[in-house]
Image 1 (cartoon, rainbow, N blue to C red):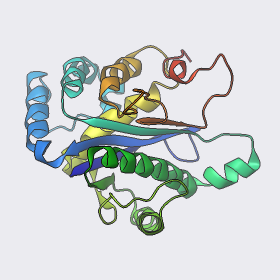
Image 2: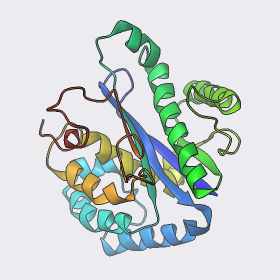
Image 3: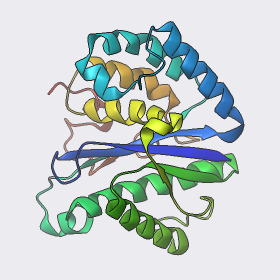
Image 4: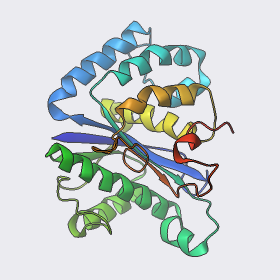
Length: 246
């Protein structure tokens, strides 16, 4: 069984680029991941009582310095990364209404794409999984839980979610190592879309081999990394967009 820990980056409906994603960890490898990550933070000189967050890396020299050994460590762990990045400022009103009408719709769109890809990953592994989501406000949590219960029961337009066990589990990130790891994945993945070369691009590239890929082609975009909508011009290739300077 796998646990998929999810966190968000960006504010749905406000930032123009919203991401939801994180890490899938096999249950029997949880203790290994926990021990190795805690040892890595200790060796990097990071205080044991302080959460290591992506936002810290962007604002603290100490955290940025620690990010080099930390992301080296993450890239060598048994983690499977999965992120959906949404560009929510499209001009097509019908398209916008369907996928990005408001903050709830944006979040549901992202969660649907993630759940579909987690289902395919679980089928490939011949396993089952649980989704653990970073908690927000009670009302938002309740709405997204009820939405997920519906698609879990009825399926989405493209997938049955029968390998995902039960409904969503929600909790605050500072109590969950898995949600902290999700933050360290989804943060740089989103930021690499628009910040160009720099810390976010470096961290994302370090994690790239950990992302879920197509079992036959090794393709990343559309599998472990869902970018929606995709760029349509010849100059704006899918992979190149990840590292394009702002």
